[in-house]
Structure formats: C-alpha cells, structure tokens
Length: 434
Image (cartoon, rainbow, N blue to C red; front, side, top):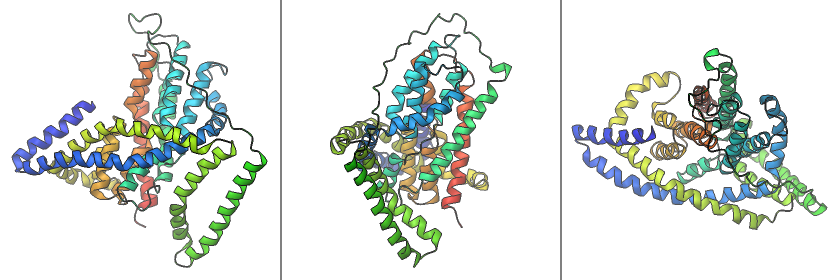
C-alpha cells in the first residue's frame, strides 16, 4: 500500500503540474527536498546518539526489569489462558516493559519471541488465537511513558523552543488508543462471525516456529552508601534549585504560565540526569554504557535516510504542484469543524502504514508550518500516538507463521483512530487558543 501511496504522490504532482504550468517548481522541489532530507538526518544524529546511549544506561541500571515486574500482574489478568510460567508470558512482559520505556528496538525481539511461544499454545495452525490478537493490539497501540526523544530531536532540529512540550499529549493519546484497541478486541472476540476457523489445507504446525530468546536485561544492584548519598543528594539539590527559581518566575507570570515555562526548561535536563542517576544507583559504568548504546544511533540514522529522502521528495513534489493546497482547502471546512487541521491529514493517513514515512512527513510539516505551530504540535503528537500498525501485524504474524489475523486489523485501526482523536483533543487542551 505504501508503494502505491508514494508512487501516487509523485504521479499526481507531476501530472497536475503539467496542467497548471508549475513543472519548474516541481523539478526544483525534487532536488531541494532530497538535499534537505539528508541535512535533516545529519541534524538528528546527535540527539539520537545521546538519548539511545542514555536509555542503555537506564536499562543496564535495572529500569527495564523494574517496569516488567509492575506489568506482570496486569498481563496475568489480560491473558488468563497463558500459564504464568510459560515462556510466552515472560517474553510478553519484557516486550511491553521495553515499549513503556520507549525501547522500540529492544521490544521487537521480545515481541517476536512472544508470538512464537503463543503459537505453541495455538490450537489452530496459521490462524491467530485470541491471545495473539490481544497481544498484537496492545503492541500496535502500546503505551510509552518515556519522552519521545526521536520526535523531540526533529522538533529541536526544526528550531522548536520546547521540543518536549508534546510529551504529555502523546501519553494521553497512547493511553486512549491502547484502551480503545483492547476494548475492541474483547468486544469482537465474542461475536460468532469472529470465531476461530481452521484454514483449508493448513499444515500441522507453522514452518517459522523458532526464535532465539533475547538476552536477559540487567537487574538493579542495591545502592551502596556512596551511590545512595550521591543520588539523594542530587535530588535534594535539584529540589532546592526549583524552589529558588519558581518565585522568580512567578514575579513575571501567573502560576500556570510560570509552571509550564519552568517545566519546559527543566524537562530535558532532568530526563538526561534522571536516566544517568538510574545507572549510578545500580553501579553502572555510565560513560562506557552510554557510548555502547549510542552506537545504535548511527545505525538508526543510516536506516531512515532512504525513507526520509523518498518521502520528502514525493511530498515536496506533490506540494509544489499546488494540488495539496487544493485538497487542503477543500477538506478544511470539514476537518476544521472537528478541530483537525487539514494540513495534518497526510500524517494521519500515513502513520499506520509506515513509521519512517510518517516520520518524514512530520518533518516536512514542521519545516513548512513551524515546529511550534498548532499543526506542527499536532503532527508531532500524531507521530507518537500509535505504532505502525501494518508493520507490527506483518512482522509479528510472519514470525509465527500466521496467515489469518481474524479481527486484529480492525481492532488495531480503531485504536489508531482513537489515538488520533485523543491527540487532537490533547493538542487543543495544551496548545490551542485559550
């Protein structure tokens, strides 16, 4: 589907420009956007390296294991058909804990392992079980509590004065999307039309039924007296500094404005220091751990560059032709009536199809409308509100040899829609006109 979307953007842009005499603008946009995409990736490398390294420090410090322990009781209730001591339960716990911490690359191996193990409990080969569908729905709309560092890096590169201002709206959107997807799964599984039916000629067991267990994450070591003194002393100093700064801000602004301004100013430094303190408290060699995790940032930058160039060139040519303006003007009365700017529609349509593609479209929106405009804030929030639905379904079901996903797709898409609606409402709450 993404193949046709990408081709369609270029085809429509070129054909429409041929009738409107804007072929020169389309030609210029193709080269300008290709150069701009690479320049944008270069600006992203630094923040990616920084935050991936910091998350590695926190993970080695036991933060991942701590979150997993909190999630285990919830998963036992959601998946009563999965034995507590089954490998599927352990893999699901670690997968969701990784997602909560924003460790998408770490979550995928655990997710693949969980699907393979769930398939061992599956009574109908090739057909997704109810437990599989619920796991897919949770992954496609997984709640992420950590700051959206990748999106924040793009916003910072685009000149935003508050790159992390979208954090809370994203958490709200994620929560609504996840709840909607899970509730839809429980509703659809009770309908007779969605009952499990064996595939004709299905093999006795899927061919792809092996998956290596991901390495076990580190557990937190108990803090010794030096670590305890350092961590708690640092927190006390920060609290004292905040108590001193807040009265100065209150002298020039209301409590609400002063608090928001202070939160925006303190958020990134506190996040960086907080992740390091997790490592210090568990006696992690923070510098070596940070450098080891940071190497992944270069790999991520290399992987996303072709996607960024392809999508930005297609969107740039489509926009330069003038056809996008025509479509936006036609839809604006309808979308504006529900508080959704039509300029953000390409982002909403592409998000379930391609993470890298929607990332590139978000970058283009930020460059065109500004990172701190309402459209820019909404596009940034949409990027973080859900996962890439079709990618999750394809990769996870492929690992377990599942050919019939039953009602997984509508459940996930309803979750996406709920996430988009919640993102719009949250942006109006936080960034809309007073």
